[in-house]
Image (cartoon, rainbow, N blue to C red; front, top):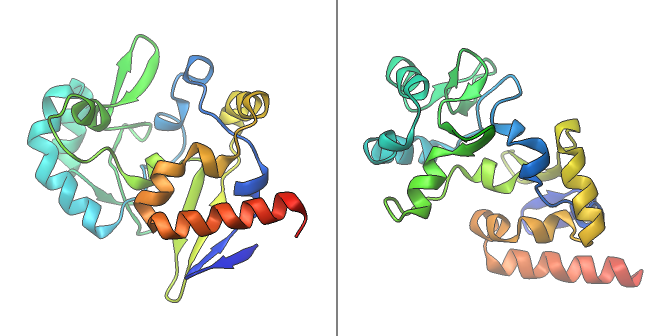
Length: 190
């Protein structure tokens, strides 16, 4: 672990390798697990605002869940998160064949909205936990992502490079440039 500004960062994000392999996992991270995607308070307001534009991209079951539960929910642990369909799939999940995709991201890709998706989804496999004085930035190892780890090793792409856009979105470009410097120094053995 090392400190970077107001963050405590796990060296795993520099040392582990990762590239999503949707052809292998079929987007399992959007349909497996026991909770929705973590959200910030600001993101709950965005979801409320964009829902009418995202709704046409969603499945019937997702629309039903959102209209019954809301565009976001308080999870079992009290955290803000996306609603689930029958405690399984994220309500915003759509399918291309057997592959899970994000309906929000599809609306974004088509220029309907200007918000890509929750930053927690964009950052995955990095998870950020906010505390009063700092944020903890950690690598989340999940066995459904084994194919992504293998592909990352094959392509030699460290986690932090795979999620560069998301890290800049969350922490800013200056923070990311500092992270790159730490990674370079670590690689040189400094």
